[in-house]
Length: 284
Image (tube, rainbow, N blue to C red; front, side, top):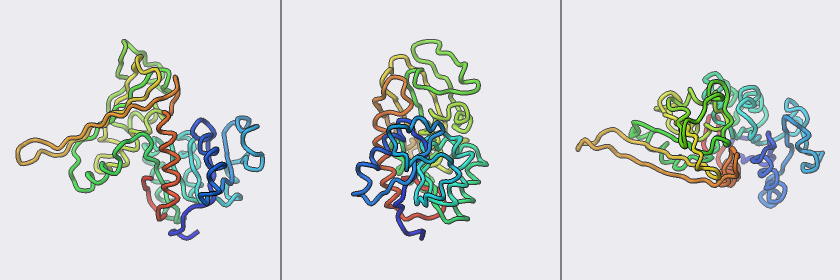
């Protein structure tokens, strides 16, 4: 597939809430948009029974090349990117739904090497990060000095690992983590994707200097709240440029993905199908 062609055949890796939504959209709207769903893979194949046509169920992820996809969309878990991301790029462009995987430097390097070797792009979905393009432009212009992303929701909405798995809320609102995003991603792989996207959007700061804050708030039973705070260097008057966005995303109780993020991801899929595809990491 030439680099300037748009992806047409799409494979979905992961069949949770987000994967189910994308599959539904592709089956119902894909044909009129020139998109063909060619496979769906899930770690537990039984979850696809009765809802994904048997001919589209891929039992072995290593066999995805036989379906000749132009674009593979990962909406499963960062482990898929760690373990299979570089191999997927051998056959297709890759839309990463778990950018927290790129907090591991070796994984990011493998993806970049595979992207350039095989001529396929790595796309990263903006997800719940509001103002991604503005952050990137400011960073490229040298006007970004600090970036802080706070994600708050009810404790039931977290899927935490390692030391964070045993962290307990000490009151109605508890800060579970505050520090570099790179240190958070391994222990909150499914709750740090917005922060990881911010780190990728601001490479001058990256995973080590973008600050992530994870907050358990018992009052947020049906909502994910993301605050993005950034500032630039002091100007002639000594004051700094600053922006603070506050995003409230409705979510089902205990859900990892908010409702608006599901819609945004479909738009990201359509967006990367329309972008010129070249090696490297790109937002869509």
